[in-house]
Image (cartoon, rainbow, N blue to C red; front, side):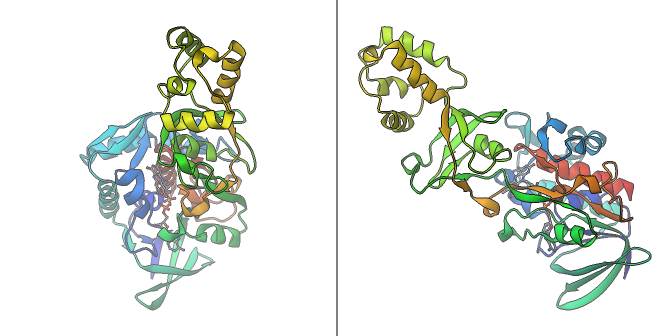
Length: 389
Ligand code: FDA
């Protein structure tokens, strides 16, 4: 069977591409349903974009690469599409837009757009091999236990990254890119919780606190969540994109409180109170107790000298923690690295050296922050390739 375009991967980027690449498009996926990551994203409500999305919210060896696609299909274009389909949505925080009802609304919207564009979707289809031919590509697949050979002029790699293999993530896009001599920026897990030596934060598991997490010169002001295995929550997921192995992370536990001034003032009014009691009024009591135990700080507030308060503040405003690692691809929301952007046109996502071969979405070395940015990249890059085809 001959197609104009075959898209490998019916995730966010693949479906967006199929909605624009015209009739004679076939979308292939080994999963039994399209857009599975959309379905589970944002706690089932899909944080589908961010009002403030811009190139500065993305990591890549070439930070300029994402600019063209993001500007030609921006968050405003996607919001317009969501409005056209009458999907109710709201801003949760920090410009993050979520569906009011269900992430499935976004999947239905993309399926409707693909249907209107005349694209065909084959699920439960395994991709066995890909080969370049004189006129395009030959793709061997197995479907319903039957092997088939398909041919196409354009082949789009949209099989995403390696995150959450249990959901069917594979490195297929990287393998095919490598087969065509496109280089790959080494991949690792991003937007991922940190692990620490067993039991380190166990007494605090389940507790959340607003912090500023900093590594090198990047900081995020968001929530920290203690887990049985270590540290998670939006602040830590964000910082994980920038973290290098064995590097310490600084946690400011009072990013919005002038702590030293507050404690000195409270020393005048509440001097007879235990330091732990006063701190527990400014942060979760269990966390205050845990930290004071570690710092061996005891006694009434009135007992604390200026110097003692100063060093306590330094400890709480710059608490250094060094993770032993991350939870890896098992729970990572994204994969950092991927198909080298040097190999692709930033306007069309087409490989510079292989005519008709495109790569989009998470498979490419462009990774967004937490907060709807990764889906925006999927929409923008999918649109760039789809309209170029
Ligand atoms: P995506 O992974 O969506 O799609 C790839 C498709 O290829 C899948 O359908 C897969 O089955 C298929 N495939 C893979 N290997 C194959 C093979 N060998 N053969 C055939 N098919 C194959 N982002 C965001 O902006 N807001 C959010 O709220 C969230 N939330 C979120 C929660 C969780 C739990 C995760 C894991 C991730 C998120 N993300 C997110 C990230 C977001 O889901 C991700 O960046 C996009 O889905 C990437 O879109 P792609 O289309 O590139 O890959």
